[in-house]
Length: 80
Image (cartoon, rainbow, N blue to C red; front, side):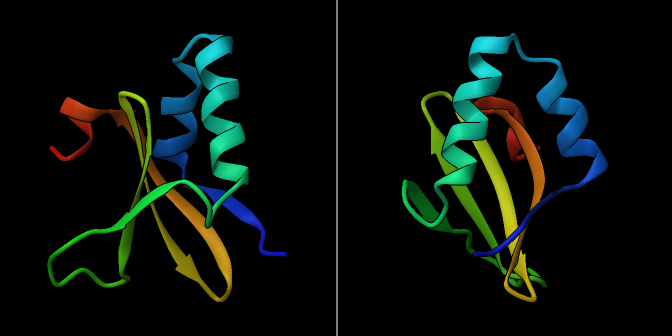
């Protein structure tokens, strides 16, 4: 089983959500690779993936078989 690591920015974003939304997002993250996942286009190094949870998005990449959560935000703000 791969471990899940949160970058500082992602962890701070997660803390700003209320407890109900936060638990929904964490539950979806723990189920990766299941869920609405899409590989993001572009010449990204490392390769980035998007997990959709309703109106929320989680951007992550895989590093040495571990999942690294880079960003968590709403649909309109995540890609800025």
